[in-house]
Length: 290
Image (cartoon, rainbow, N blue to C red; front, side, top):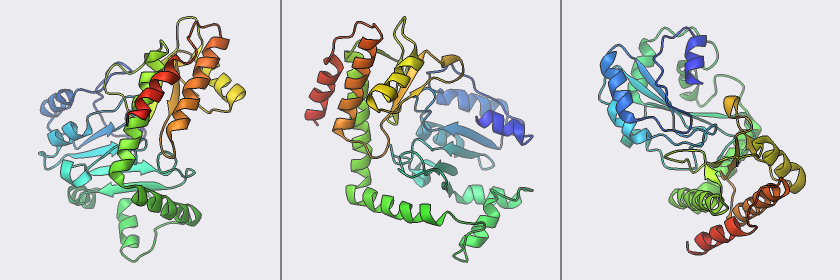
């Protein structure tokens, strides 16, 4: 996605390609920067919903922060509110996220954290954009205004979300996501299923490889139609090969249990020889041991 955006805006970029389901090796980023000292920005995803992989944002930030004229831009849309991202401590220059994932709101709000280094480079940049212009937004924010029409109703909702997160405590929020994710992953494996990510799975969602002879699209469609559980299928060349279940935001123990139980029943109904209760039992053990 970052590559497509760069091409759209006429920006020359170097893409670090890895197989879907694998995390980017931070050393590959270091090698790319060494090979091309003119690189001005490094764009990464903290968490990928298409594959279920979390990238090592902290290690990549450590590599980029030593370069005075290079910034790190992080897509944290499915990471914000799921796991910790220390923007200042790690050296994340621009972090962008949205309201529609773990922030538990409808789409329509975007969030951005911008470092002093990023502002310095932005002030020197020749930006012809009208919308999504950080400099215009900064000027408005300094006057306690917004540069463009604000989503006031969503901002009121955001205030309530922030109250919920503060009451639970960020550390507890991150721990809850990690606990739900671990139970979901181990439950899927106990049911005889394979996870799609080969390494570094994200706590935002669980991505499961469809068993041989089972259409991943049929799994997520039947989850919705038979049991009212909204999941997702695969994208591009992964269509029909995987299914994805989120555990971001307002999730608790029985959301995980229900999703696992429904998955087992759907697979059984599709003719896959799954032992009913195998995944559910494993998840229950893990969630009780919290």
